[in-house]
Image 1 (cartoon, rainbow, N blue to C red):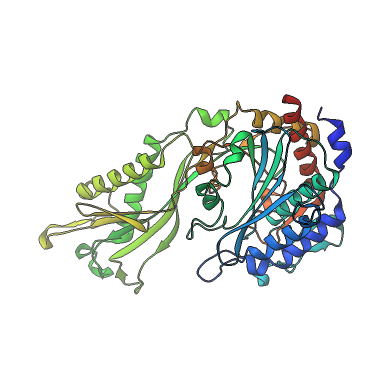
Image 2: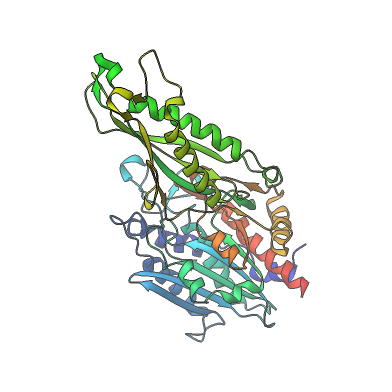
Length: 457
């Protein structure tokens, strides 16, 4: 059992101050949407609400022990670091990843105003608005944890540190969120204990996430009249056959990994198309070019670098042997010898360009690597025990959805574990909401984790 003294002293999550703070945060969410250049969030709006809530129990006002610090790397885009000091040097437990930006929301598509906190008329447990699950609800939750520690002032051996971050929802701009804090050494103290990234959902430990590589496969053929198909190279047919070949080779090289069962991944690594585009034309024109776009979701047991290299090899091999691709019908072809024309493939994933014969491969600079949490760490053990104690059961899971930044923290030597208390079914969705009862359980999980780690010292 977790220490009853800490649980009894701090108590449960107080609904009124939690909802009051969350209402202020959701009220700012219109200006927190992160989709540059059109939408650049102003996380300082949330940061100031967090600071205002904690200042009465901070060293700055003399009202309490909390050390509160705002850190900004861009105008209007703050991070907040809050520390409840412990008595033993070199001991820390941290709650990180509560980000103060949100994904965009279109009010015309919602059943209620996404930019204000509202309540379901038939279910007062349901708190509605953009950011309630991802991730302003967690901002308010951890802020309340730190506030209560500051008010109650329990004697703890571990320092408890909370890091509220900017710029999680978009990677076009870098260096202004947790990546900037790590670079400047401001989170080094967090290596002295488990780091809990609070930005997942459904109240269970998320022990694995996927990497992601986006790609654009462009086929160049020969545009011609559809009544003279023998004089055309149909770029659509070429692209479909080429993609089928690429997928076959990918699944041969990156099959389901044995560790995926241990980590309970719902799916193995996948490559699939998600968009189709072409320059346009009449129904009586065979298209001379088209582009299929999609992504690769990669479990963390495979290297994204290896996948990129293989992708280059696949397309190079197809271009060199394009006449061997299956065709569609008696006059379908990808080579016109009389005109010295060959269809060709171009793979684009903007930013990095590599020339390989007739092949251009461009890979997105913000390739994201997956994460496999350390299942032997004290942090994982404490999270599982706390979850079972408070929620009633523990069922760790993994998804090939991607979480930015945490693999980099893991590579820097942090013991990263992930959890969250919103709802996966409303993540990035229309009509987003969370449940107060779930957040209240998260509050108790945090106290249980702290108590367990205290008992170790």
